[in-house]
Length: 154
Image 1 (tube, rainbow, N blue to C red):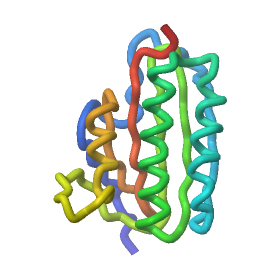
Image 2: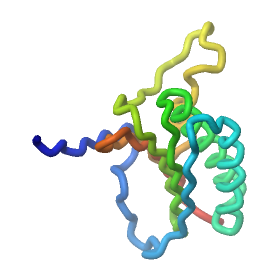
Image 3: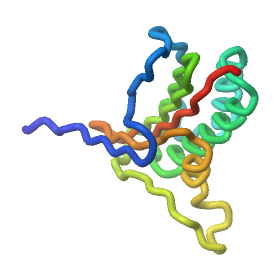
């Protein structure tokens, strides 16, 4: 059986895992697994991310990160039925949050929802608007949707 090649699709911003000059070599990390049936865990992930960023980031960046991680975790739980792993990596220069699901290789794309969609379909529009960079990385099983916020603590 041929080994499957890893595909990477960058939607906007720079490619995944690139480090900027001057970033700390030992970033701080937060990691959380969320089961598919744990819809209430979205709020818990928000609180954990806020606590993780408390001394690492300014209020504006923390608020944006909470909103964006909520959107990505909710999308993973609704669209995959397998749960997700949330990883946040913070340096003095940037915050990178990744939400990995383990079921769907379908790469998400933002679209403009119509009036009948209610609140559905706006998550990636928020990510596109608030993140300094974001993208999607296909994995052997599932995918990782990520965003970055630059600037760190003022």
